[in-house]
Image 1: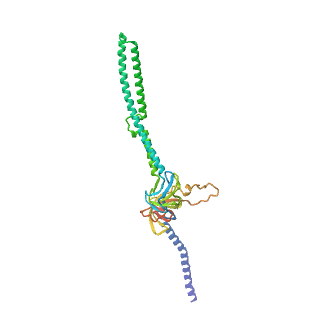
Image 2: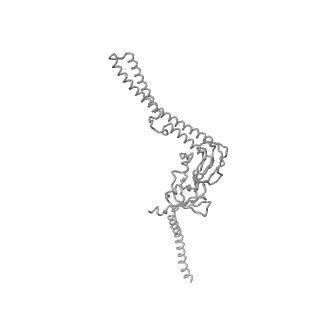
Image 3: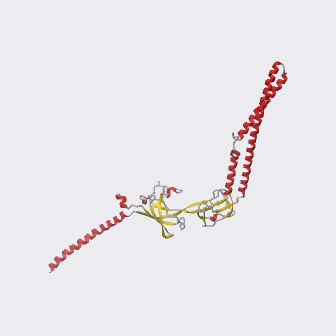
Length: 354
């Protein structure tokens, strides 16, 4: 029985060892195959939590200088396009408008006088030419009479002098016409308001009126007013000096900073899902609008200098702009953190074997 027992147990031990060996060899292979399959089937979605909500921010400044006399908005107040934000003292600009109006009236009066002067010079030339013709005929007639002895030499000399005076008067009349024509820009028939001096005065009046209109600063778009603490009644507002900030609520996008190693399959037009940390129950649909022209370090005030001996390679990130679909962005605020998932449409298997 011992031999029989020993004979039966030895094959069982060998089978057990074979199964264990097979299991030890096959299990890693199975895990490797499953892992490889999972890895090859992945890579379709590119994700990052280095993303933020962005909204267009407009620095509101004045196109004219002046003293602030009223502030019509408060901090974080929503305004519509065209709403008044604050006003400057308009009185100096009203005076400028009145002065420009007077200058325009004076320019028109001057041109009217020039046109009258041109007409007067034209009439004087006609009269001088008529007088010249008469005295020329008198001179010719008396010249014939003098040759026949019927007229004295003194009378002939007097007629010659009169003829010369008529010639001089005609020349002066022509010069007056030329001067009047030049003053009218070479076009005596042009309308008063088309004269260069009148047009220049009208342009100065338009500029003065525009400056007056600019004393009321209005919202350029719908949005939320911020940083109004810098704006107070009585302070002086300079030209181009930012007085407050308008965050445009209708111009919203998400900027995702992707690693350069994640960009291989990312292209404009691809669909993306965006979740906002402040709104965990809401998912926003979006699409890739554009990929940045360079990394953030390339556009910094002091670009990175990599030509040094202690250089260490760091994976760079490029900004990818996401265009939100839909039009309800009222809950979003600029700077909010977001998580972005981009559907590239291709797995690693498709990328490698297509």
